[in-house]
Image (cartoon, rainbow, N blue to C red; front, side, top):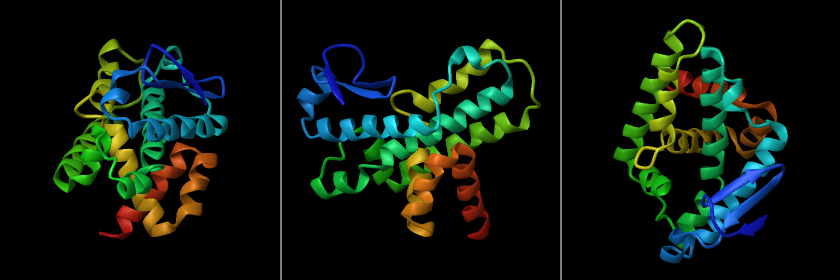
Length: 190
């Protein structure tokens, strides 16, 4: 983990995490420093097993579907990793956690996420268009962050129902195992 001044709040590059300690968010919410660091360091472990995709590699709709799954798994696990400690310390000011802690908002975000993913899954594979990249906006944009909130919820359900080891194994096995486990649990709980 390295500190930096400028750019985004935190990034991962070439096996290292970088935290922008001058970001105004930390001045307003100093408790977030350790938790955002945990988030970014979690990404380092994740990308060790699952190399990051490049937008330039997304040529077909199947590539886009894979990128959505990858990002949901990556970000969901990183949001989930510090959840228990955040609750213990009362540091749940970040929008992902305020959404997760509000059952109604969390459910709305999950419904929006799965509506978009279901719509995407219904489309036959084809060459990607510029319009297709529009799915990234609600998935990652401030005020929605659908793959962060939904991915964290999915991780929480897997952890609570199947155990931490099973959840951790999804990091090594990749996004499809994460989705398969979650979908299997949801199917069997109906």
